[in-house]
Image (cartoon, rainbow, N blue to C red):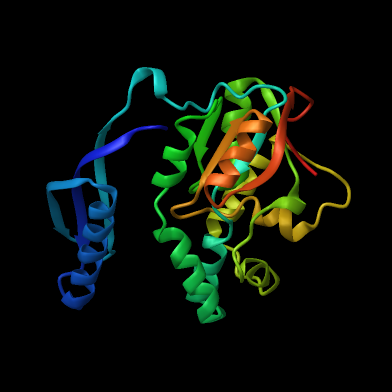
Length: 248
């Protein structure tokens, strides 16, 4: 973490019989985000495929002294999360016709928000560890940080920032397949304290698209980060316990 994007190459797979206006919207949306990020599109490749796939390979720069790795969290650090959770649940609810349009709009707004401002706000702070939260869910990526740092991350489920509609999606049974995969993989590393709300524990495994950053840093710098950007204090780092992750 900590790099600045410079150039991108695109990869596109698209059914040739599908509506080309949809294709135009996909490409326009991607170009808009690249422009916002100050990243130049150099070219790419397109392939006829029955399943739509689209993305970028991005090249950037980072000073070696400013790389934010996930392996240097320290005991006593605070844990800050820079985006709310729930995009996977809301997307699944949308696919099943169960989602409230306002909840979908809030989820889209979160996914469209770049992590650039959060990364720049961290630049002047004593960040010890950082990871993005994406397909493995908060606990999956937190597990990587805990194991790499040889510590335990304690997450207070009552402090989690949550997108509107995420918990109703759990109640309605709109559970992504990736969430269940994440739970199967990461749960052996998790101790859940008695009394933790099962819905909140489920949310912690939700696969995120364009999720936020999980940042480990001294408490005083955590408060500075929260003052600078929308973010939430969700826990702390402790010496290694019997599990890499504790959910309280």
